[in-house]
Length: 216
Image 1 (cartoon, rainbow, N blue to C red):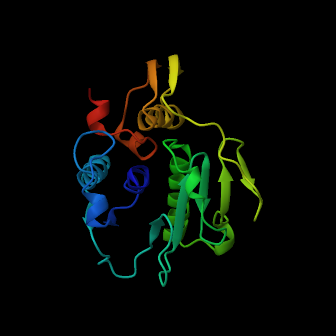
Image 2: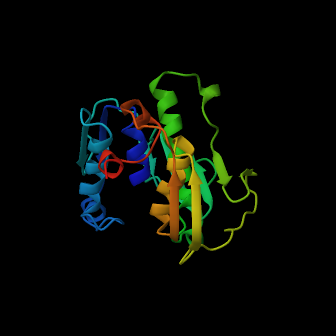
Image 3: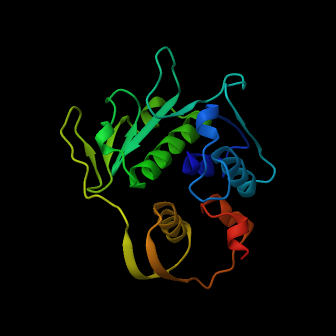
């Protein structure tokens, strides 16, 4: 949810996040406050001029709807994403990811967020259905699609991940996203970050970092 909202706020000026109170009022992974507050803080930091809010039911008229998780009956969202472990799901036609796949590994969730937001962007600019990313399951450990009705495994478990010393040369869209995922995964490491370029406002649409983090 955090990654999805972060990416949306880079290009979409009006986003309503519908989140049940029970889910919105849980502490965020960062320890900076409740989930709902951190989501809005993240989006407003990415775009101070955006119109972002959290509610317990949708109020926008004719929205493009991105749904995270299993879809309740009688709802027809525009885009559906789900995840578990290394696996990302796009669309609801290929079934749900088994509950046993859900663990502390955030790679599948980040991948699902990227796929879902990409399709929302395509809907927003009015591309044809043939130009959308096709529904399916994506194995992000093997970097391949899972065949329809195919058997897939959960991949290696990621827990208490200790990566030792890391040197990251280049903090553009790829490098900054890599470091962002390290933070989300709560990996233990000593990272040296190297980039001689100056940060400009136009870089913010390609990086998941926030202004408050970069200014430090």
